[in-house]
Length: 411
Image (cartoon, helix red, strand yellow):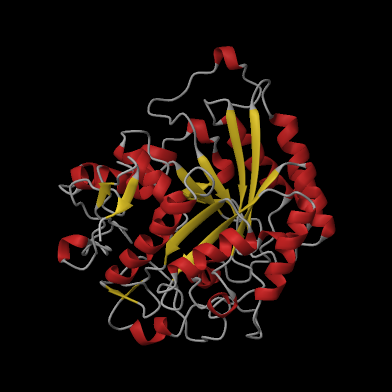
């Protein structure tokens, strides 16, 4: 596809208008040892690998992800592992390549998800100059953050992350917060929300519940975590009908969302954006889904490993679900990307009797017919692992008009 003019470009049938690819330049390598990070176990897929992404793979990724977009907006996204471990020079080269291949009149967004431990003044200057959006991984105030987010020696990381927060603020680096919700912080929704709003001073928050599958045979081992401290850790796969002890329970997750929502809707609508609330409302209004849990099908958000292996989803980095090697063909020219790879699970959702409920889901039951919020942990057989009100476990949140014509919780 490279070198073909836009005027004569013919897109293959069923090619999505945009494809999001989450690239992992360091593979699974990370300087933290978070107990809940199942991705650390993916090291077993690449025994003996040195992990840093090679320059030819880097250029192929940047070029092909730009070529694959039918829309005029391009996102170059980096994750890990911990992507900052590869060093600033790598990202300098990536930014040069992005500008080299970007089409005229196209807009470029570069993002990086990081634990922020290595962020310093030099990093901040680069991130601001190249208009990076930084996703900051943080689990709340000190005790909640340090419950699981520790380094390889088991030492806490909260103060290192807060130092990075202040540096990014000093350098005017745009960042948002990604907070995983687990057994150690799920009962502190309002405290966490206020901490991010008032102390971290972010205007955008993502809450992601920890729901990790396990089989009966492996439960004791998986409960010990996925970090290097667990020398018996298995390769994490989306198998099993049980969940780990770190996983959030339906009632707790529902109460967390209600607590955060009440604080947000009372004080911060239009000022702070909580991804799950915004996405659920958009889905209810019939707008295109921005999150896979609200989508009719999936498969347009891919994961690229350090060596060029392409997977149909970041949560399904498993050999049977590989979409092939990155450099075999451009994204736009391979049917493995969407309909055959990522969407083969999505098509199961399309034909599922749960779909009508899923499409109209509002995560907090905002005065609409009470529908469950399903957080699917897998599509390859077995029962859906859901945080689900259908079982009488997920609390409802009803709303009514107040005297001023706004909204207030019905007590």
